[in-house]
Amino acid sequence: MQFIDLHRQFDRIEDGVREGFDAVLKHKGFIGGPEIKELQKQLAEYTDVKHVIACASGTDALTVPLKAWQLKETDAVFVPSFTFFASAESITLAGGTPVFVDVDYDTFNMDPADLEAKVKETLEEGKLTPKGIVAVDLFGLPADFPAIREVAEKYGLFVLEDAAQGFGGTIGDKRAGSFGDVGSTSFFPAKPLGCYGDGGAIFTSDDDMAFLIDSIHVHGKGTDKYDNVRIGYNSRLDTFQAVVLLNKMTLFDDELDKRNFVAAEYTKRLKDTFETPVVPERFGSSWAQYTLKAKDKEERETIVAKMKEQGIPVMVYYPIPIHRSGAYKHLGAKNLPVTDELSDRVFSIPMHPYLEVEEIEMICNALKDIVNR
Ligand SMILES: *Cc1c(COP(=O)(O)O)cnc(C)c1O
Image 1 (tube, helix red, strand yellow):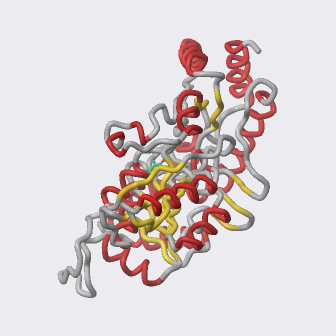
Image 2 (cartoon, rainbow, N blue to C red):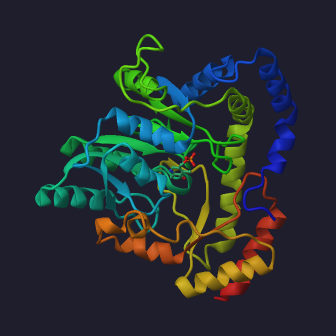
């Protein structure tokens, strides 16, 4: 059994992908081919955001807009510690300093109350100037943007939505990518919308930010391509990846329905044994992961080992919170009790649109047998 099965999906799009690749091989616009423009247009329509700029990875999709905000080392950007490393790494790459915020026990997402507490602490300490927030749509569920934006407005902070896992998620009738001043996503193959290599995209309805981001992602280009007016990156999506993504977009809504079906089937079978994932009223998840909590670290180790014996892959996202990682422990961040607890207890079970009910049944029965409660 695969943790994320890309074979079954490929069967559905194989002809389109091969035809699209052939077209690129003929027109040879390997960088900046017409498929890139078409993809950006479709993504903008899908998320109802004015500008979409495709780039080379989800990490770049965070770093490029952060660079546009011209961070200094004394600028604080608030970010959860319970997330993939790149959410914080991008802040450092862009020149700022991450300040870690705790997450909510039920949703795994940034806790808006702790966000405000950490902003106040930072102001009182007086060493760093609060500048912005990177809020993550972890495991596919949008962060609590209505509450996060309130804090942002109160303290004059920018909001960057890390929707690397969240593309397809919703709050009311709005889609992930559109919740911050800028949004970013990743097309890493295992993400809800993945390509066949590395890729990412940046979303914004702010014309000035879009202009800066467009410049920074290609060597700080000016109006003339060879007049470089600022320092930037070489961060472009290649045309082959756009072909893959255009084909996957034709399936995306159907896959989203299928993911929701799989999640509901899991929850139905597991809710009496585990604390199953919580999706708040008006929120919709893209189910990048289906994540459960073991009783403690020891039980989690047993679950991971025994499931593996039965050929069922179980992953731990994330065993080391970023504030305890080798790269960031020197910051001495503390008071992140929920993050610390979740890092010891969480585990994720196979999740992709093509899981069959029999497989779901098998996975759930195996899990229930192991914990025996
Ligand atoms: C995957 C991921 C990224 C980075 O994306 P890449 O395309 O791998 O660079 C950033 N943030 C989160 C939350 C992610 O899951």
